[in-house]
Image 1 (tube, rainbow, N blue to C red):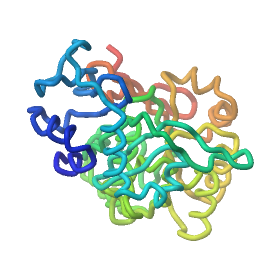
Image 2: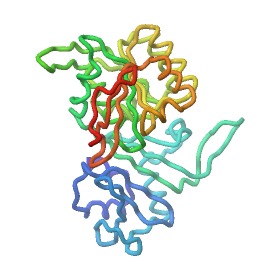
Image 3: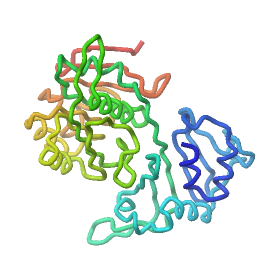
Length: 320
């Protein structure tokens, strides 16, 4: 991971990060803003990076990002051809080797009411790709009923591990799993990865392990992608991240009626928040989802707080 990451930075930043002695598996985010201090999220805490190659909570000693540093970094990220990544730029992010996601912001260029491109990029947000294999072990017994997968919705605030959990569920369901002495055969899984966060595709190939029976549709709107995958790939399971729009809900109804099992995530802190969301509340009301998994970052990221069934009955709790 370290070598992949260092390649995308300017020479000065590369030297700075090379001198940092920390566990890159605990490095979660890096933020570069012109004329602002270099920030990282490490082990779920925010730090500045200082000139002496260390992490600090003191802003006054932090390394300051210049326009030249950010421009050079963008040149490395885009391989000196930002135009080649025009579609990704329109969506506000790029994915680089290793699956690391680069969010960008600056001056937006509009054309006929749509985002055409972006220039004067002055803000970069790097989210490092981490795959925690086995993190779904605890929840799979609750979502697999005999040999059928329950329609499952993962609920969590941002940064609490919902995509990480979804990714491992996809991998294990695709490969096939064994627990309690019973073998569950692998399923054909279709992933509609609108923001390139589940598979973290680079040049069309997932950088994360999603299993041997998984097909990925990258950078496609969820609603359109679900329809396309049903028509073209005949999946048994469809997995999507961060649902919420009316068209997402309509596509989920369609997929369920086509016999596909559903894995999805949504932002929220609890069941009440999800019930109060427009469109999504109807899915809860009509009991489309059969399992609800609530996550938090209490004590650690990805903590499974509660699991409910479609009737709202509590199947599991770890809120003590």
